Image (cartoon, rainbow, N blue to C red; front, side, top):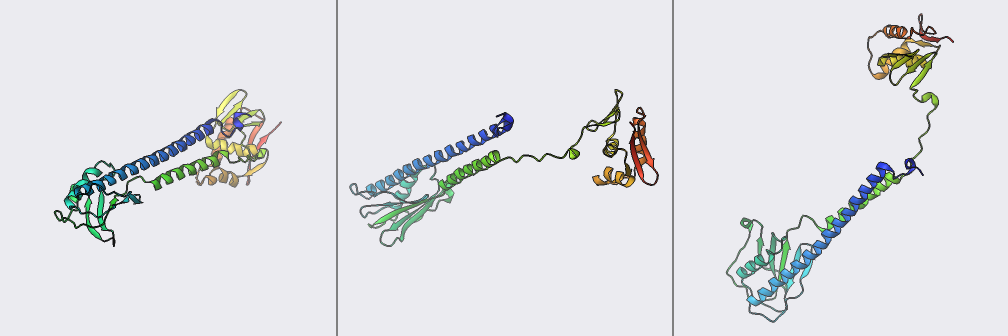
Length: 298
């Protein structure tokens, strides 16, 4: 099979290869980001357990357990404890700020200390990347011994797992579109009738009429034609030895182009006659009251 019949030949093969490479790259990026998210999540949970551990030590408890960190959503976690304890708000704030500073994606968060019995808020504060926006209250007031849950909500990150899914889905969509474009069946073009095809070279007796390059070749001598002269002679060439009405000539030469000009058709006919004079067998004859006729005698 020749390259001209191969749907992946030349530019198509190059473009399809490029799209495939971009798609593979998108998949790699998506899974790399997802893997990084998993690592960052695990590291964050370790930091949260460390916060719980230090809170218990500050309350004088070095034996009871910090229960497994519960992830409520991509941005919200809860730290639970085995036993009741007491805490100092100042210590809680400083501990969370010190430990969460090790998490590059934890610059903004809100901490709620909830009562286990009814989930009411015993203490809360907000930390922002801009320290002026921090909201911290009730420092210096030690909280009573009770069952507490530390709930921490982080500000959503710019890239999430959901966006990764969109990225992967977008890559699949691009590949599907590329496959449709490059592999869809190509309908063979309908061959135009000979009369409808543009003929670059027309023979008028002994004259060779080059419509594409706007030239006449008579006995080896080449004569240039203007665009309008070429259009006029093309009309005559298609209807040799037939009368062509003036109105038709004017319409096909000027009106079909959306412009009606006051140029004299006779002027172009006169110029064509002079350029055809070297061949006495070709004449453009005026038919009184009707139009013109291109006469070619054998």
